[in-house]
Length: 460
Ligand code: ATP
Image (tube, rainbow, N blue to C red; front, side, top):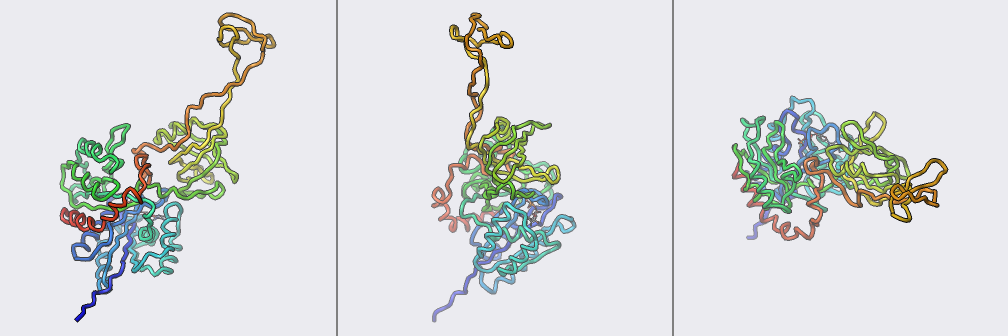
């Protein structure tokens, strides 16, 4: 007799806003839940997704990260999975903190395009909880709010994330509870060695200018360190090279949009700018750069709809240096976040600066001597010019126009890795074209997922 296999269905879980500045981390909640579900035999179809959203949202805790998990389940398994998910989120959320509004969402079946569009907008706009509720109802997403409703935006957006253009991976090691809040014992020399071994396959381990190790956060959260890279096998191997002086509670590999510039995909005209957007503006410099207290550089950019102040902060290194050399009429493409500072006036904080055309800068100066070539000087008003060196009088009395040498060239300028946001695409990833370069490793993800998941589960 023929036995019918149970029908499998896609099942997606989105989680956000479980942590506060005093502790916790939504990636930890997701790692715990993923490992608990896998250890109970539920079948994941991908690594957990760590989805970074608009980094200019003012009420984020740290890096505006939301998490989603993706499984293939039988109909009768759904209730149990939902129960476990809500219980894990409850167990790992600090509900006593005013700013923590944990949310868990469940989607059965394929991700609808409406949710993908919502997720794309959550990368560069401010979205309302009202709209999130509306979308959830429209596409049949089940929502669980543990306190307030703000976490709904991130939880929904994490399920709808679109990684088809570009994505990366991060392996995160978590600390045991008794060590949280103490200095992280990670051997920095081992990180520098790992960085040299895995260059091109991992990124942002070490700041190249200062030698500073960048893989450890600084707060009281459970993350010991995270290594970012191009594929799961490379980050797992890089992880193995790091010497650690404290126990690791568990590790998890996440698929993520970190390091992809995903938040800088929306071009806007200046009249459409609103506070807290992440945006790209194309225009011309309309007010020369000036330096503010603290060394920050401000210049004004205009397009056909208006003009906006652009701020290149001291920490942005070559972005600031280049901004200072801009002049009226230069063509620029500026990517960054909108702030209302002072209230009512918008400023575009520059995260990436592309100089697309430089104007010629002219200078008036005295001509050179026709006999010895030295620079001439004026002999007084209406009295002509004379060579400074050989004293020859010049018949020509007018000054000549010369073209100044511009100290900057066309190109894209980014901050150094130590000043990167999670989403900033490092220059080292510029030559990576995901769909072709990683075709083979993507194809083998299905096979490697299981073995890598079991590595993570075994180390917990
Ligand atoms: P961590 O990175 O440490 O996990 P976090 O920085 O992600 O913390 P959260 O505590 O998750 O901060 O707070 C971010 C809040 O902002 C969440 O409630 C999320 O739903 C909401 N949010 C995220 N993106 C947007 C957006 N584009 N518009 C409106 N709200 C958003």
